[in-house]
Structure formats: C-alpha cells, structure tokens
Length: 564
Image (tube, helix red, strand yellow):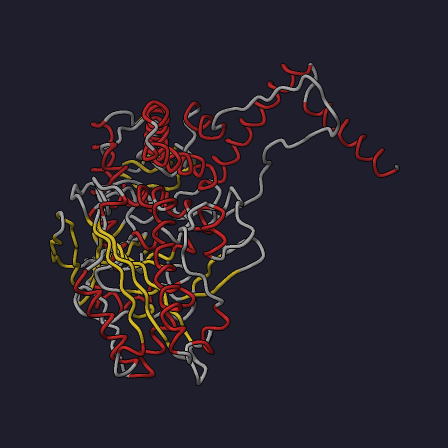
C-alpha cells in the first residue's frame, strides 16, 4: 500500500501512530518511508508534508529576546546579559544539556516527534551531564558538549537580535613584553595598553610596570579598570596565541588574579585535552585553547582577518601593521617602535614613554579592523545558536547544521544521523589556452543555490523542509539588500548582503560535508549533475559544440605544448 503524507491532518495521524506503536518505521530512502502500519507493509511519501515551524523560527530561533550580548554558564545556571542602552540586564535561568538516542533506554528519555534517527531525548543539568558524558561517546548518541550552545539550541536563543555591531561596547588591549615566550625566566610585561569604545565614548589608558609597586599590582589594577568599564567584548590582535597566554602565565608567576569576568571570575583557557586548530592557509596551522571570560565575548581580530581574507587573498602578511597599511587605516603620526629592541630599551627611562605610546596606538588598530571586517560575523550570529566568540572561529557548514538542529529540537522534533561521505562527479572545469578577440563572459548567478531552489533539492532527512526555507529566505533577503546597498550607499546593507551571499553559497558545501547531521551525498551529487547539464547546454548554445569536444581540444593543445 502507498500513502502520501501531504497535509497537517495526515502528519498528525502519522505522528500519533508512531507514538502509540501502530506505525513502525523499517527504513527511509529519500522521501519514502517503508513502515509496518498495524502489521501491514506500507510506503509513505512525506515529500509534501506541512512544515510546523514558522520561517522566522527557523531563521532566528523561537526566542524573541533582543539585545543579548553574552550568555554564560556556572553552577547549573545560565546567565544571559542583555544590553539596555548603557546598562546591562542580567537574567538567570536553569541550564540544560541534552542527549539524543535512537531508542528509549529508560523512562527518563522522552519521545520526540517525527522520523529522525535520534528520536528520544533526555535533559540534564550541566553537573550531571559531566558525570555521564564519557559514556555517551561509547554509544550511538548525539549531544552538544558546550553548555551554552546546548541551551541555545533547546530554547531557540541567539545573540544580537535587533542590534548593529556598534551597539556593543568593546575594549581592545595589547601587551609590550620582555620576551615572546612567557615561560622564559626573564619574561615580563612592561605595559598593558587599552582602548575602550562604546558609541561615541572612547577611553584610553596604559598600565605601566614602573607606575605600580609590582607586576601583580599592575595586572590587578588593569583588571579592576576593565571591570569598571564593563565591556561586552574583549578584543585585540593575535591575543589567542600571544597576549592572553602571556597574561595568564605572568599572573600565575606573580600571584595576580585575572579577575576580568562580569562576576569577578578569572580569565582562563578552556579545560580541553586536545587543542583546537586555526588554519592560516593550506600549509600552516596553529593550535590553541579557547580563552573564556564569564559574561564577555573574546574576539581575536587576527582570526577574523584570516577568515575575512580567505577568498580575496589581499595580504602578503597577516602582521597587524601590514594589514592596517594595506587597508589605508594607519593613523597619521602614530608611534612606531622596533619591537625587538623593547626589552633592552625599557631599561632607559627616557624611552619608556615612547614605548607606551606605541602600545596605546597598537590598541586602536584592532578596533579599526573590527569596523572594517566584523559586520558579516556579527550579523550571522543573530541567526545561530552559538556564542559570538565561537562563530568567529567556526566554518559555515557547521553553522548551517546548528541552525537546522535548532529548528528541529526547539520544536520537539527528532533529527537525523550524519551520512557517510562518498565520491561523486563534480562540476565541469575546462579551458583552451590562447589569445582571443571579441570575448564575452557569461556568469550564472549563484548556480548551485539557484539549482537547489528551482528543483527543491534538499537533504532528504530534512523532513520538515527547513533547509529550503533557510535558503529561500537568505536568497530573497540578499536580493533586497543588494538593491538597498545600491540605492542608499549604506555599507550596512552591503555587509548584510555579503554575509547572506556567504551563507547561501555554503549551502551546497554543507550537503557534502562529513560529520553533519543533515548532510546528504545523494542530494549533493544531484546538484552537481544538474549544474553540469546547465553548463553543457550553455556551451552547446554558445559554441555549437558540446563540452566533450572542447575537452578533447584542450587535451590536444596540452599534448602539442608538451611536445614543443
């Protein structure tokens, strides 16, 4: 027997059957579910079923709270910080983490709606989750290790709803030190420079070693000043790999407390056995542990610069001074100093003022890069169940997966298991080298996203249709924002459409990325197959020959060049 689940009543009946045991799923292939319905073998077509979640809930999450600038966790509680003009509002709720399983292990697991592989959920307090986490790795479970992400997914929360990137307060800092390695015996911090900005308020200060009784007093004095200003974001350049590890080591050595958290807690590195990795390019990787500061985001503008430059490749070097110079952002008359001489020159009292001015000027540059580069990262954060800090570190494919997982779990729907990866034929890429006249360029606008929208290609496991809703939303919004950018000249709209373009163009790559719940190799292969067909027809129309003809001509040209 064949049935079609193509309206809400049919969907409700189907879910009821799953819950009371009348329907037992055997397997799912594409949009067809093979199931036993009251003992009878049936095929159920779910392609056109009604999506219960509103588009806005898919795109932004169901929680409507605006102006969230940070979410932190401690003692099984979630602390949400909301900006209200110059004030910060703190909200405290119980924290929850979840584990999903394909079967009900005991009565503490609750049944989720739908046909996803992970159809049972249990929630935990963070402290109880920590006790059982090692066991989850041994079985077929799905969970989010990060307490805040887990809570955001279940509750449909995001940062920055209704905000622009200049609505947050930030503090940029920089160190001038005796060594590059904080573990050396002569390691020391000579000064800590800072620039604070909120709206039109800008404050600068340099904390100097020679103005305090000890390095301990200097570090703790700086921390007290930061807490008084209470910035939403701590930023700088290469602070993940240098400034923060150096500060932490010097604080330990001199008995200082790095109390930078909104609750007075210490800045520290995450407790993680295996370090994370930053890729500078195809050949260079750097290990790090994520810094954590309660109530604040930490944004390393070096990482943001690496990501912003992935496509453009504008910079020969990612040194801060070089990037600033390429962008034409260098302040006229700023102080420059040979960093290799600072250790020796600090001994000369007459040179200390110049070194400190150099340090202060260095704290302005990350804020300039913030204004130049941060908007796409800031804007996409308002759609994702991830802290802003993590968004600046992670790739778009994983972000799309998080958005889809949230779309399901916040409404109580089960989610699929990741697919194994496989090989399939890609796009057509060819060219016949030579000198041409009367050349013309044709470009298909967003070819793969257009194919997915036109032919409704989606992950087959996305039985609620959230993927295409997301793709349609960002595509239409981008068209509108491109028009606004052109008509108004406002950079905000250009940044907004740029962010949306990145997200849209990542949709195909998401389908074929291993390790993601909603990946789908068959759908990815169908996108490239359709793309080849479009290109084949275009080549035939433009030249009178098919692609194979030009491939053979290209091969012949290459052979002749090799003989020559």
